Structures are given as structure tokens and as C-alpha cells.
Image 1 (cartoon, rainbow, N blue to C red):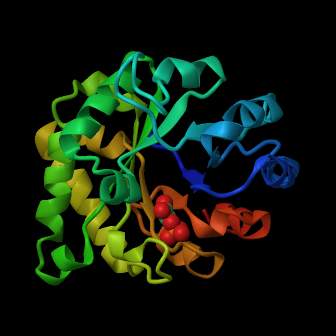
Image 2 (image 1 turned 180 degrees about the vertical axis):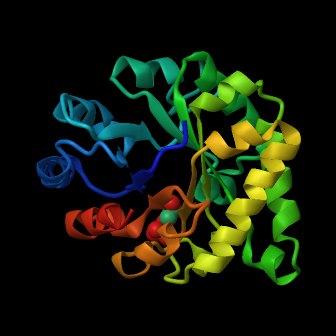
Length: 250
Ligand code: PGA
């Protein structure tokens, strides 16, 4: 079912104490948010604490990454069942920082997606073109191949656990956003690509978030576009006031 979602990706920010402060500020605001799904993604060490703190409240907790294996000799890694055991049912996969700094490829992401699905987790799947791709007008084909190589071998039923997040790399953390028109154009293209690979019904039902320098002052315009179902927010999610303002713009 297509939902309106605002998700905060806290990246490698906020220690335990700071996490507590931000969560209590958000909890006070989002006790009951029937119209918008609110998700926060603290760092691994604070996931258990966050999931405990948010019990009985409508805010969901996501991990920022996970390993594709079920378990074993993978020093420093975290498995899907570990996440589930601390109450985490959602995971961000494919973030451009994971792709750029940790060498995550579409093929690896395809494995991670399948592992998360085996554990019935919901996946916030990130993808998006780099500046060079846009300059050379390859952005549509890059996005299409990211989707195809990581997701299009899934069966239709699996898509009920997938939320997409289109994040043009040139807009992440740069203060530069895609214009609302550029976001809409790409989101419509993504829906068309899914409709071609599967069917129109599935394409209409998948939630597609926009991410990349979403701030309180540009969220309203971006979220007003018909194929934009919400946002994945980095920098502006680290502050309760700006994250709440963005959620309210949805
Ligand atoms: P940003 O990050 O809002 O700071 O650009 C978005 C993201 O990385 O998901």
C-alpha cells in the first residue's frame, strides 16, 4: 500500500545521550501520526535503546545497513536476525555512502535485499545517479539499471516490503536539491519502469521517497509532486524542530 513516509537517516551521528534527547523530542510530537509514517535510523549501538524507547509510539526504527549473511565469521558485521532480535523491522539498503565508501554494488545489494526479505523486514532501498550521470544525461539509464540489478528479480509479493528512496548523489549533504520538477520527472520514470517490469498496480502501490538536502524550506514543494510520497532526510533529521517541520510538510 502506498504510504506517506518521512524517514530520518542519522548516519554516524548522535551518541546514546543525544539519541535519547532527540527521541524524546520526537516522541512528544509524533505520539499518534495516522497520516504519515515516521521512521528514524539511529546508529547500530543505539538501535535497541531506540526500539525500547519508542514502544507504544508510532515512530518506527530502521537500521542503516546490515550484512547479507545469516551469521558467521564476518567481524564487525550485523545480521538481519540480530536486528530483529532488538525490535528492528526496517533496514536502509543501498545508500549512496555505502555504495561510494564501502564498495556496495547492485549485485551485493540484491543479496542483502533477499536476506532482509527472508526475515520479513521492510527495506528502504536507496539509489540515484551521480552528477556526471546527470550531466551526460545518463541519469534515467543509471537509475533503471540500479533498480533492475538489485530488485527486478523479486517476485511481485516481495514488493509489499519495499520502499524506494530516490537520492541523486549530487544532492546528498550538498545543500543542492533536485528541483521539484526533476524529482517528479524521475519518480514518474521510476513508476513507469516498475510498471514495465511488473505491472501498473504494483507501480502505483510502491512508496517512492525523495532524498537529498530536503529542508523545511523546500519540503512542501517537493512533497506536493504527485509521485513523491515523502522523504529520506539526512542532515535536517538531526534536529527535532526541522525534522518535525519536514514531516508536517508532507
Ligand atoms: P541529506 O542526506 O538530507 O543530508 O542530503 C540525505 C540522505 O543521505 O539520505
